[in-house]
Length: 112
Image 1 (tube, rainbow, N blue to C red):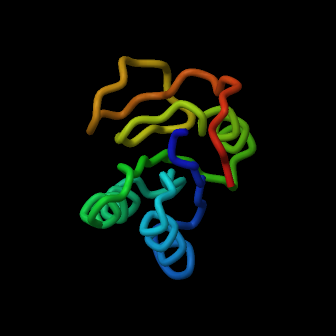
Image 2 (cartoon, rainbow, N blue to C red):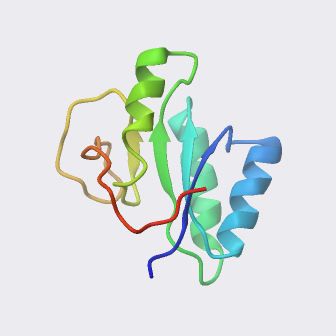
């Protein structure tokens, strides 16, 4: 079975960041949704430095925007270790690049 996945909003500071780090330590793959991609990337690097945890992902999204919230809702099942803006056009996915994942497909993965 693949690692369970948790999409965390507000993960760049405070309780959201603490939650992301703790869930990663417990073996969850964390997807960090944040307005500020640079702050989210800093948290992603912290997660990735933890021993034995799945690589974290970042999705740049402003949840105050209904369009970006809808786009974000379509993305959690298809991520790789990169920053993904919820509202950009599709591109090839490579770690460290900005791209948009394909629409979420039905899988046996667990989301929290």
